[in-house]
Image (cartoon, rainbow, N blue to C red; front, side):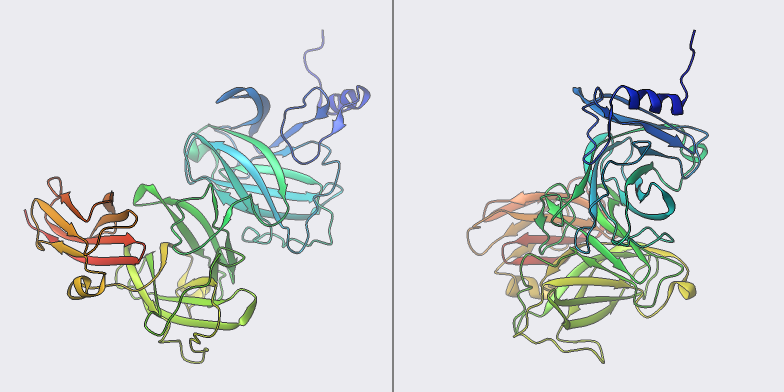
Length: 449
């Protein structure tokens, strides 16, 4: 009695019985006719199974065992793909639908030449949801740190996937992952809307928040480490990073130009830095002409906490072009610890979100400058009143953040007057943020108990 069949024998049998060589997109649906052979290495144990959320769908299942290496993975289609992946200078992306038991799990995708393993490219994306399917985009023009750069002159006809790359099974414990729909993306994105201000990172399913790194940054969209309900961008300025390492938000630029005017030259970004007094540089430019740009810089004031920084482009950096209102600016890049390389600072991790047009408004300016918005009393105890000078044309969003940058309350305001219950709050300093069609406004709030 035959107890097992070797991989070589299996491949020969499939060849004899007429299985077609796998090709993109890989969907796992045609197991009767397509050779979806899964080749594991480093301690993975993979198989093709029914989708645990949809019994009529077939997917790949990967168990990263307790003894798995940090580089454990699975090759999709043992002998490679029937056709080379059609990368071009502008089409460098693939997508994979994945299911992970945990959010914030790094997934690495590797493409290589089946005849020459030294020709390869690797890139990573990070899950944003736990125990739920999501489609991740992998941009091979943004290679994983320390790996080869994509060369579109090469042939890439083999695909491998690595779940929780960089962590061994001993450290993580045995975990199970699923994947499906391995596809090449033509035209730049997964049918998502082009990013535009404000950039919040909340709509990853519908908005293309592509992050393009340069100079040694490694960025991804992840779960906020201080609030599991919030998505933010994470930037690792590696030990090998240049002084000018940074990240462009929305790879091909914004859907609309930033509406600078003579009286409105500011933007805000909410940032988290491991150190106070860290210089953060924000740069805007014309996506079609990088010679048209403006740069300005602000230092953080707090360590290991969220804060909102205001960038005034009328105060441009010395030696860089001044803001010209006749120009079009529709691309935004951020640079953490600008002017210091990774070798000097050591590898450090930063976070950011809420990239918005407009400046911060202090307590003394809110009522006069924010369309008649009134927030009172301040200090407050049990309740906070919010009044708008005119009836709202669309809902406003009110959010309250604590002194550590954690979101503690958020709700929509639809009426001209509203009351916010503060019964569950502890005494201390908070920040109130109101977002409406006119912009976003901030005010410090003291709660006394």
